[in-house]
Length: 182
Image (cartoon, rainbow, N blue to C red; front, side, top):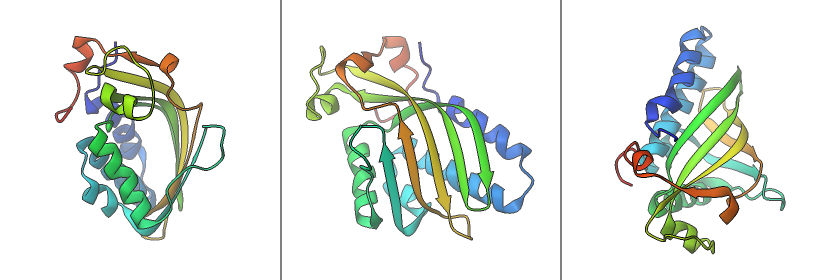
C-alpha cells in the first residue's frame, strides 16, 4: 500500500533543506518545494511562478528522444493538462538530492495517480474506467536555475511511460490517503 499524504513527499526535501546552509542552495530548494506544492495542489499559476519566463523541459524515457514542452505557453499547457486530467496526485520517494549554484539533481521512485478516464484518453485499456490507478517508476531529474534561484527548466529521465502492465488500481485504503480534488 502507498500512502499519498504529501508529507511523505516533502519529508526528505525538508530534511535536506534543514541541512543546507548556503543561501543560494536554500533558495533553489525553496523554489523546488513551492513547485512540488503547486503541482500537488493543481495550481497552474503557482507552478508557473516558480519558472523563468521561457522554461525548457526535456523528458527522456519513452524511447523517442526529448518529449518535453518548451517555453511559457507549452509548459503552462503541459501542467494545465495534468491538472485538468487529474493526475497531479503523487508520492515521490526521493533517495538523494544534490544541489549546486545552478542546478538541483534528485532521484527516486515516483508514484503518480491517474484517474481511469485519463488513462483511457491516453489510449490505455484498463479494467475500471471509474477507478484510480498508480503508475510507479524510477526517475532522475536535473532542475536548472538562474542566478536568482528561479527554475529555467528540467531534464527528467525515467524508466519508461505508463502501460497497462505498469499500472495498478488503487485500493480504497490508498484512495483515502489522496489529497483533496481527486
